[in-house]
Length: 251
Image (cartoon, rainbow, N blue to C red; front, top):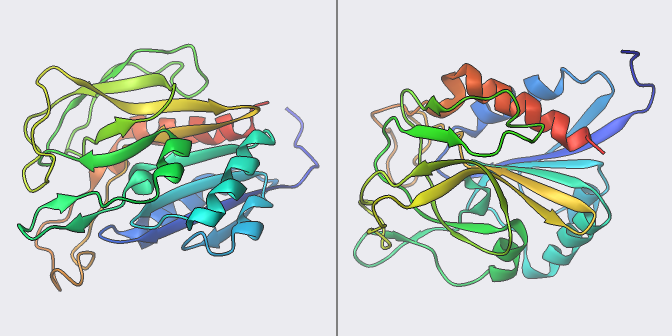
């Protein structure tokens, strides 16, 4: 295939709390460098929303980083104009600790979560779990078989908004200890990978990709004893990410 002479651009937002953001940024930039005509601008938040939305594509990996209410319309316009957004892991997270030292989702930012189709609520303790491919008629899931997240990751229990096309899912893995929304029905399925169409554009959301090192839980602790590597160690996650970047460019 001849190399494209047209330069394309992507805005990459990696920022927030409680994750090894340096590692994630490094890995994502590595995947993006595989596209010779793609140029990347890096951001830590949504503050420069005009520049972010001026790109051809958007990729986000955040936790407790959300746009201000007046910025959501920019993201909506980005999508309705026909552009695509790859949202990873904690992009739908907005968390705080209550008086009982349980994590919960404070009110606010509803328009943003409705736009992306989900809001994180809780996750069970990190451990391996099985992911089922339920729709392989899609560029991202095509050729993927059911797999186990060896080593574990955060299985997101979420609230879903609007119509989404679920590509991969997993079943409840017990109570979400440490979260206000602790109890989830046994046998309930939870999207791991989904697409949401918004007029001419779309969002692809993948909940896999947790990563936490020793120094990523400040100010709660200065040193976190156990590193959490997440799905980044799995070849299937590499495949999902590469396919997702192809999806961004698909017309």
